[in-house]
Image 1 (cartoon, rainbow, N blue to C red):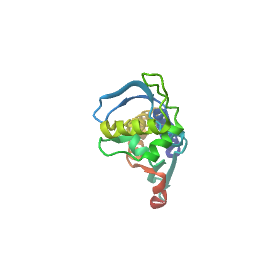
Image 2: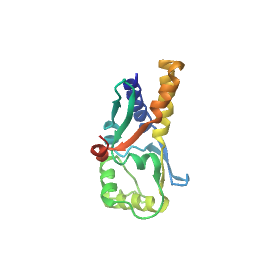
Image 3: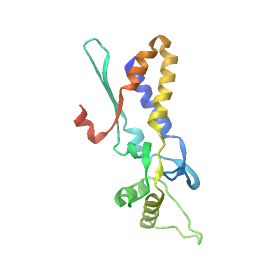
Image 4: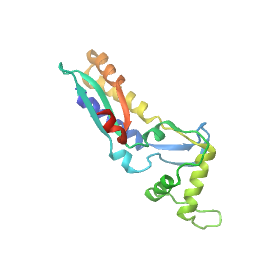
Length: 174
Protein backbone atom coordinates (compact mmCIF):
# COMPACT_ATOMS: atom_id res chain seq x y z
CA UNK A 1 0.00 0.00 0.00
CA UNK A 2 2.73 2.51 0.97
CA UNK A 3 4.71 1.91 -2.20
CA UNK A 4 1.56 2.63 -4.22
CA UNK A 5 0.92 5.83 -2.25
CA UNK A 6 4.53 6.90 -2.86
CA UNK A 7 4.12 6.32 -6.59
CA UNK A 8 0.82 8.19 -6.52
CA UNK A 9 2.51 11.17 -4.84
CA UNK A 10 5.17 11.25 -7.56
CA UNK A 11 2.44 11.08 -10.21
CA UNK A 12 0.60 13.98 -8.55
CA UNK A 13 3.77 16.05 -8.23
CA UNK A 14 4.23 15.64 -11.98
CA UNK A 15 0.59 16.56 -12.52
CA UNK A 16 1.05 19.90 -10.75
CA UNK A 17 4.39 20.59 -12.38
CA UNK A 18 2.69 20.34 -15.80
CA UNK A 19 0.04 22.91 -14.91
CA UNK A 20 0.14 26.38 -16.42
CA UNK A 21 0.84 28.97 -13.75
CA UNK A 22 0.33 32.70 -14.05
CA UNK A 23 3.70 34.34 -13.73
CA UNK A 24 3.58 36.38 -10.51
CA UNK A 25 5.93 38.40 -8.39
CA UNK A 26 6.63 37.20 -4.86
CA UNK A 27 3.81 39.31 -3.41
CA UNK A 28 1.34 37.85 -5.89
CA UNK A 29 1.23 40.69 -8.40
CA UNK A 30 1.18 39.48 -12.00
CA UNK A 31 4.48 39.90 -13.87
CA UNK A 32 3.07 39.46 -17.36
CA UNK A 33 -0.21 38.48 -18.95
CA UNK A 34 1.11 35.18 -20.28
CA UNK A 35 0.67 31.80 -18.67
CA UNK A 36 3.28 29.13 -18.87
CA UNK A 37 4.54 26.13 -16.97
CA UNK A 38 6.77 26.81 -13.99
CA UNK A 39 8.93 23.79 -14.76
CA UNK A 40 12.44 25.12 -15.31
CA UNK A 41 13.30 22.09 -17.45
CA UNK A 42 11.96 18.61 -17.92
CA UNK A 43 14.77 17.57 -15.56
CA UNK A 44 12.62 18.37 -12.53
CA UNK A 45 9.63 16.54 -13.97
CA UNK A 46 11.60 13.45 -15.00
CA UNK A 47 13.93 13.07 -12.01
CA UNK A 48 11.64 12.36 -9.09
CA UNK A 49 12.34 9.25 -7.03
CA UNK A 50 11.22 7.94 -3.67
CA UNK A 51 12.84 6.02 -0.85
CA UNK A 52 10.74 4.29 1.80
CA UNK A 53 12.39 2.56 4.75
CA UNK A 54 10.38 0.01 6.67
CA UNK A 55 10.78 -1.25 10.22
CA UNK A 56 10.92 -4.95 11.14
CA UNK A 57 7.12 -5.09 11.26
CA UNK A 58 6.71 -3.72 7.73
CA UNK A 59 5.61 -0.23 8.75
CA UNK A 60 7.26 2.76 7.09
CA UNK A 61 9.84 4.56 9.22
CA UNK A 62 10.75 7.19 6.65
CA UNK A 63 9.44 8.41 3.32
CA UNK A 64 11.66 10.68 1.22
CA UNK A 65 10.97 12.18 -2.20
CA UNK A 66 14.10 13.22 -4.12
CA UNK A 67 13.94 15.89 -6.83
CA UNK A 68 16.30 18.26 -8.57
CA UNK A 69 17.80 20.73 -6.11
CA UNK A 70 15.87 23.70 -7.48
CA UNK A 71 12.50 22.14 -6.62
CA UNK A 72 12.39 24.31 -3.51
CA UNK A 73 12.46 27.58 -5.49
CA UNK A 74 9.68 26.40 -7.81
CA UNK A 75 7.60 25.37 -4.80
CA UNK A 76 8.31 28.26 -2.43
CA UNK A 77 9.17 31.10 -4.80
CA UNK A 78 11.84 33.74 -4.29
CA UNK A 79 11.71 37.14 -2.62
CA UNK A 80 12.93 40.18 -4.51
CA UNK A 81 16.49 41.30 -3.99
CA UNK A 82 19.90 40.39 -5.33
CA UNK A 83 20.52 39.34 -8.89
CA UNK A 84 20.03 35.57 -9.34
CA UNK A 85 22.81 33.36 -10.68
CA UNK A 86 23.25 34.38 -14.33
CA UNK A 87 24.51 30.95 -15.46
CA UNK A 88 21.34 29.27 -14.16
CA UNK A 89 19.06 31.78 -15.87
CA UNK A 90 21.01 31.50 -19.11
CA UNK A 91 20.66 27.71 -19.02
CA UNK A 92 16.93 28.08 -18.36
CA UNK A 93 16.61 30.42 -21.36
CA UNK A 94 18.44 27.85 -23.51
CA UNK A 95 16.30 24.96 -22.21
CA UNK A 96 12.93 26.66 -22.54
CA UNK A 97 11.42 28.15 -25.67
CA UNK A 98 11.55 31.70 -24.31
CA UNK A 99 10.78 33.97 -27.24
CA UNK A 100 10.05 37.67 -27.05
CA UNK A 101 9.65 40.42 -29.50
CA UNK A 102 10.37 43.96 -28.54
CA UNK A 103 8.03 46.73 -29.74
CA UNK A 104 10.35 47.40 -32.67
CA UNK A 105 10.10 43.74 -33.76
CA UNK A 106 13.68 42.75 -32.94
CA UNK A 107 14.44 39.52 -31.10
CA UNK A 108 16.56 39.96 -27.95
CA UNK A 109 19.77 37.93 -27.79
CA UNK A 110 20.19 35.15 -25.24
CA UNK A 111 22.29 37.50 -23.11
CA UNK A 112 19.59 40.17 -23.25
CA UNK A 113 16.86 37.69 -22.32
CA UNK A 114 19.02 36.38 -19.48
CA UNK A 115 19.53 39.90 -18.16
CA UNK A 116 15.85 40.85 -18.46
CA UNK A 117 14.65 37.73 -16.64
CA UNK A 118 17.31 38.17 -13.94
CA UNK A 119 16.39 41.82 -13.47
CA UNK A 120 12.70 40.94 -13.16
CA UNK A 121 13.47 38.27 -10.54
CA UNK A 122 15.72 40.69 -8.63
CA UNK A 123 13.06 43.42 -8.66
CA UNK A 124 9.88 41.40 -8.19
CA UNK A 125 10.90 37.91 -7.09
CA UNK A 126 8.41 35.27 -8.09
CA UNK A 127 5.57 33.45 -6.39
CA UNK A 128 5.93 29.76 -5.62
CA UNK A 129 3.55 27.16 -6.98
CA UNK A 130 3.12 25.18 -3.73
CA UNK A 131 3.10 22.04 -5.88
CA UNK A 132 4.30 19.77 -3.03
CA UNK A 133 1.37 20.64 -0.77
CA UNK A 134 -1.14 20.45 -3.62
CA UNK A 135 0.21 17.04 -4.68
CA UNK A 136 0.14 15.75 -1.10
CA UNK A 137 -3.50 16.78 -0.62
CA UNK A 138 -4.49 15.19 -3.95
CA UNK A 139 -2.61 12.02 -3.00
CA UNK A 140 -4.35 11.82 0.38
CA UNK A 141 -7.78 12.08 -1.24
CA UNK A 142 -6.97 9.52 -3.94
CA UNK A 143 -5.39 7.10 -1.44
CA UNK A 144 -8.44 7.30 0.83
CA UNK A 145 -10.66 6.60 -2.15
CA UNK A 146 -8.53 3.63 -3.22
CA UNK A 147 -7.75 2.02 0.15
CA UNK A 148 -10.78 3.10 2.18
CA UNK A 149 -11.44 5.16 5.27
CA UNK A 150 -10.34 2.34 7.59
CA UNK A 151 -6.75 3.16 6.55
CA UNK A 152 -7.21 6.92 6.88
CA UNK A 153 -4.97 7.31 9.95
CA UNK A 154 -2.20 5.13 8.46
CA UNK A 155 -2.31 7.02 5.15
CA UNK A 156 -2.31 10.40 6.90
CA UNK A 157 0.61 9.38 9.16
CA UNK A 158 2.58 8.12 6.17
CA UNK A 159 2.06 11.31 4.16
CA UNK A 160 2.80 13.47 7.21
CA UNK A 161 6.28 11.97 7.48
CA UNK A 162 7.16 12.72 3.85
CA UNK A 163 10.30 14.73 3.28
CA UNK A 164 11.13 16.51 0.04
CA UNK A 165 14.86 16.71 -0.66
CA UNK A 166 17.17 17.80 -3.44
CA UNK A 167 19.17 15.15 -5.32
CA UNK A 168 22.47 16.56 -4.02
CA UNK A 169 21.37 15.75 -0.46
CA UNK A 170 20.55 12.12 -1.20
CA UNK A 171 23.86 10.82 0.19
CA UNK A 172 23.29 12.75 3.42
CA UNK A 173 19.81 11.27 3.93
CA UNK A 174 20.43 7.63 3.02
